Image 1 (cartoon, rainbow over the protein chains, first blue to last red):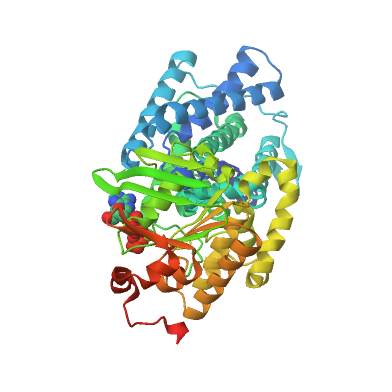
Image 2: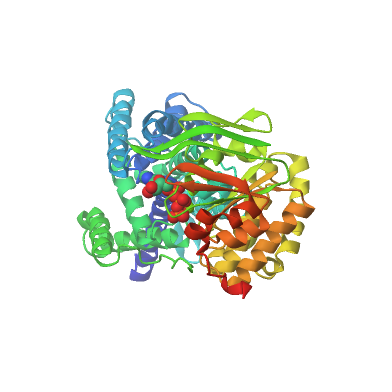
Length: 294
Length: 247
Ligand SMILES: Nc1ncnc2c1ncn2[C@@H]1O[C@H](COP(=O)(O)OP(=O)(O)OP(=O)(O)O)[C@@H](O)[C@H]1O
Ligand SMILES: [Mg+2]
């Protein structure tokens, strides 16, 4: 393979991983904006998406689409149960204890997954085969196309929801000032629950579309969660373009670093970026300046 | 239409409202005055369900509301314009108003009405129409206050609670906002409970007034009487001081 073709391969796989990191980052941002909590169980929804799809598709021989739908529904139900059982009863606790609770929940979910599905690593079959497509000299796996198109769809749906629907606007209002939001009749608790619904649904979707490329097991949530967290930190905790850029940047650096330096640095790159950002620009690289007066 | 009977409200150990009673008749403008920290905001927040009272009764249009969630209270027809405006700064003016009508989006009939209510608000505050696409955070203080009032009106309240709408505003703007409040009361028959530091202007417009001091209601009466009352003059009207815009 000549150099430029190799570069294109790295870029492609970097971008597709990056898209996933961005989606996972969205999950962090949506819950953070609604509650002020950094939900370290976010990665577990990603794991659940992949593992549940595998479970229905491979172990129970369900067709692909119902498997995916069921996986998203169940992951979302776990998200709802998590909010109901662990977050809502402690609404007046300080954010630090809530963050610790999310870490506890993530360990619990991971443990249950290990008991149910074991420690093995599995490959989820690609949605439409492994026959590479040749487009303008580059080779691209059909799964990459799935990842890009589903990511674009989710980002667009997210944007439409938060900017044009009354519920989405109510969630933003609530994130900005929950007391003023309740004064116009918005039920703050419902909005918090909704943020968990959306985050777990997006997270599991991310886990489903990446699983055919990266394999899946009970513990993939740790790494994927941390990388999503890195993406959203670069993006300044927004569920917008900043986090998309953050995810893509991380994915690219990772893939180029692994390709040209050494594959063993792949995961280290995310942590180096995370630390650099937190030290140098904790408000994020792409954070928008809040337009404010008075 | 509203009857508050002996309510007590606490912030942890702080006893912020002590056996406070107050009533409002339909169509009245009633003003609540008191020094900083007297508990005026707390009273409005107890009414809105944000800081529920621990004991006592609040009856609105025959319904006991003291233990209802804020959204239920808005639905029954009580809207608050909170202290310090509290508009949703990252959202546009239009979206702020739309959210004011949040509960009306639940029903088809409600949704159909929203545009009409919006037109009414824009007619009251034409500047908001010019600024409708702008983010609320970019508005001036006076414009934000208008937006905050407009947002509350979008819920089509029967009772409007206003918490220091003149705070930090130039006399001209204050006058304009007071005019709107007066016209709401006269034309829309909205009942108004107005919390004000600007006691003279508030009492001039109001039918009746209450004076709250360190959590206790110490005085109530017709607005004209309170204006003449020696204690009120000394404590809240600054005897010889006139409001700048009245000179
Ligand atoms: N969130 C809170 N926690 C604890 N105490 C509070 C809280 N909010 C208000 N208080 C206390 O309750 C009392 C009444 O406060 P409140 O804000 O109702 O006064 P106010 O009359 O609205 O004053 P201002 O004119 O300054 O707005 C004050 O002593 C205040 O310190
Ligand atoms: Mg106050």
